[in-house]
Length: 158
Image (cartoon, rainbow, N blue to C red; front, side, top):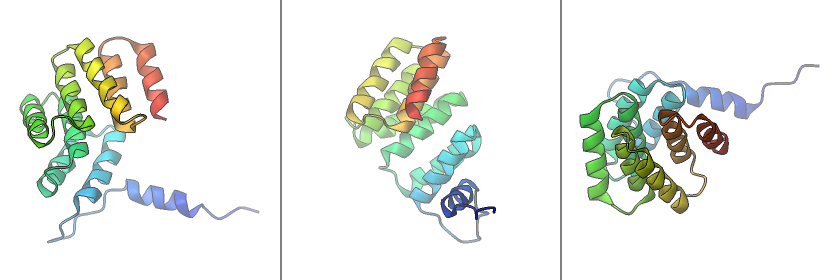
């Protein structure tokens, strides 16, 4: 006898799909963040960055959005966007873990891997086990050629 699909699985599949925008409807920043994270983890950084920048307009003090936008901008080599997002995060709260992670991405972009790693680890010390920061650390290790450390970082994120 075949069992019915899990309602949670169905909900998960639905949340991964980007809803077609309705004319005149403004999505919340948290909704845009969820959509952006789904796009990011599908490796669609262009879509993710667009959604994150929209979310920043709705929630300009959301530092998680800043960090993910910085990471996408880095992956897309959009230096101006990266600098703007990081500068705004610093103005908002320079000591917040996501701002520290933004700074790590900034150093990652500059190929200063040791400084980027120190900042990612500092951010993770303040937000232990935070998935998105852990992924940033994994990307750093990929960039720096430390594949084993990258795999370990990605596994910790799982």
